[in-house]
Structure formats: structure tokens, C-alpha cells
Length: 483
Ligand code: SF4
Ligand code: SF4
Image (cartoon, rainbow, N blue to C red; front, side):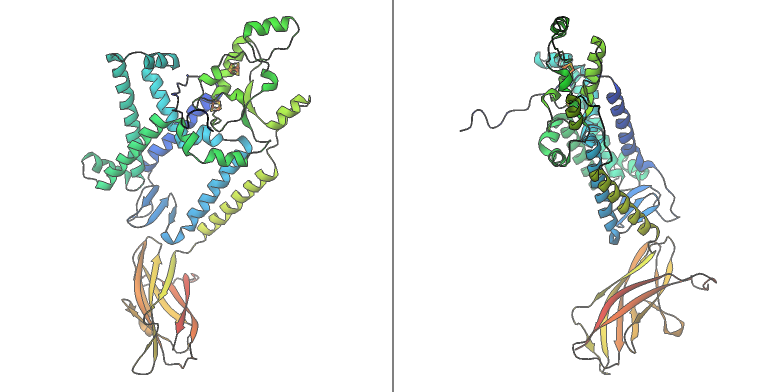
């Protein structure tokens, strides 16, 4: 039998402004993260005359991702996998050291919600004013203030959506096209979708996203341990809580009074409406604002600050046993996460720096698998894709080894001296050709002979290979099949 309703409507939260160390850190990180997000598409990076000059660009049309000096091709999507693993390990490491520090300071939902609250406070006033305004009948002045707030929210949301599409095309050109209504419909549609989602998520849903939509609070709750720093109400010091006046009287009579004066300032500033004094909660994003609020109160009443602080379960236990605080950042799990981050990072960096600037991939024809020519020779056909990852036109000589008496014909390639088959591939491009491999050799029944396709990078037409320069080579393996 269930008592009460299954669903309770969310109570509107009116976070109060607060000043202090963690608020300052949050402002700095907000400016940094939003600054990077909004202006990174305009950073230029010269790659060559015919190459895009945007430092960070997802070029969907040509299927490339550019990140400063790195260019990722579709075949190299494993770099993305590596980056995702590093991101996950970094999140785990942050969690093992300082709980939900990502949620409190860096998560986009937190950053935009923080900005939207700042705008709300600036236009409509602080907590009490906003609460009184919402409780009062609407007047022209109230409607006007709300209209200004929503207009500013929409402007921020629009700029957010606009900045996102700039990562997918040359930013200055796209801005000009957007202003002259010459950009593609896709650009306007995506800006519209992202404007709407930012406006709704940061303006209306706010802490509801953290409480009900985001999986991270549940995951991190399973990952944390007693040595991780978390925003903690030091109940060993705060309890028994009582008013300032009563606490004074109690202390005068030699009785115990906690430092908490039950002023509720820590709850008033909380962007998720949590009372940190009730202990760990999924709603607490660990933003530290209640620390600032309580420090202000403690300073005013002349008590020691950090009644609410980044603390560990271990330390609460130790203080109760009369022992000094300790912090153990180096533990098995933090070492494991750090080692994984370093190892994966080094492997990715090595592979990036040593990767080839050409590649070959081969697909054997499925139907027919082989052809018997009127001369009695056997022929297999392949589709070969060559990739030139350099910003210059290149020539490749292609050959096949592993099959006795093999003759190679390239449909779409050029013949060179000595029967060599040359294929030209444009700068930063791929080229597909058909390759026919023919042999007069007698093969065993049901033969599937391993063969190797090799491309050799040649100097430009008319030039010869410079002395001491080793030509670059790429290989691909497949089979030559017979009846
Ligand atoms: S701000 Fe500090 S003193 Fe005030 S209620 Fe919260 S914990 Fe207690
Ligand atoms: S309880 Fe404190 S740390 Fe947690 S979300 Fe609220 S203000 Fe931030």
C-alpha cells in the first residue's frame, strides 16, 4: 500500500547569491570553459594551401576531423575510442580524488545553469526578491523583467547552438552565410534545435537534469570511497545545532553546543536545493557554494570556518577518535586510473606521431570469386582504395606478391616503364581503382593463396628518389582464390 502521491511536482529553487573561494573558482572556470567553447572555432591553424585552416573542425563532407596538427581519417576512428577511454578514466580519477568535482564545476549543464541563474539574479534580483515577485500578482514591471530575462536566456542559448555548428564548417564563412541567410537549411535547423535544448535544459529543467536524467550521480556513488574528498557537513563539529543566542547560553553554562546556528544559508545558496547537513545526497553536485555560505556565517559569528568543507569519511571517523586529519590521494584506484590514462595517452601519441601518410585497403570481388579466362589462366578481381594523407599530389606504384607468375592490371591506373602500375592520388584524398590479378600457374583445388598488395610512394613525375630517402610503403593482405 503506497501512502501519498507517486509523483510530486518539483519545487522551484531560488538560489541566493554567495561570495567566497568556491564561487570565485566557479566564475573563473565558467569564463574559461564558455570562452573556449564559443571562440575556439575562430582559431586558425595553417595546414597547407588547399587545406582547411580552422584549428578544430569536423569536416563531415570530406569525412575528416581536424584538431590543430592532428588530422583523423574515418579509418582511424580508434583514436576516438582511445580519447573516450581517457575521458572516462579522467572522470573516475577526479571522482576518486574529489568526488563530483566534474558535476560541480565543469559539466556543461552546471556551467549553463549557473550562467542562467546569474542572468536571472541580475534582471530579477536575489532570492528574496524573486520569491516575493513570484508570489505577487503579475504587474507590467514583473512581466517586463521576465521578458528581459527570457530574451537574454534565448540569446545565450542561440549563441550556444550557433557556436556548435561553427565546429562543422569554416567559422568566419559560416557566420557570414548565416547572417546573409545563405547557409544550408541544416545549419539553421541545428541552431534551432540546440537553442531550444539549451533554453529548456538550463532555463527550466536546471537541477532536474542532474537529479533525474544524468546517470553519472548513480555511477559515481558506486565508484566513490571513504578517502575521496566530498563536500561534507562536519556534524562532529556542528551538532547539536542551535540558534546563536542559545548556543552562547549553553556554552556559558559549560554545556555542549555545535557550531551550526541553523541559519539555513547553506540551503538557500544551493542550486539543487539540498540540505548538506542531512548527509550525502545524489542531488548534491559538490559545487562548494554551501561552503562559501557557511564560511561567511562562521566569520560573522566569530567561529572557525569550514564547518562545511571538502572532507573525507575517514577524517570524520579519525576526528571522533581524537586523531589528526589525513588525505591519501595516492591509493590503488588513483594509481590504476593514472597509469591507464598515461599508458593509453602515450600509445595514442606514439601511434599518431609514427602513423603512415598513406594506406591501402582491399576488397575481394564476391561474385564471381574467380574467372577462368579462355587462355586457361585464372583471374581474381579486387577493389582497392588508396589513401594519401599528405597535402600534395602523390604517385604510388602498386604490386602484388605471393602468387607465382601474377600479372597485375589496374583499371583506372597508369602504366609506367617496366610494366609498373602507377596510381596518382590527390592531396588529402582517397582513390578507388579496380585491380585484376591473373596467373597461369596451376593452383591446388579450393586454393586460397595469401597474397600481399604493396604500394610504394614515388617521387613526383620527372623527379628521381633523393639519395638516402627511403620510399614509404603500405601493405594490405588478401587471398587469391581458385576453383
Ligand atoms: S550555513 Fe552553516 S551555520 Fe548555517 S545552517 Fe548551514 S551549516 Fe549551519
Ligand atoms: S549541497 Fe552544497 S555542494 Fe552540494 S550542490 Fe548544494 S551547494 Fe553545492
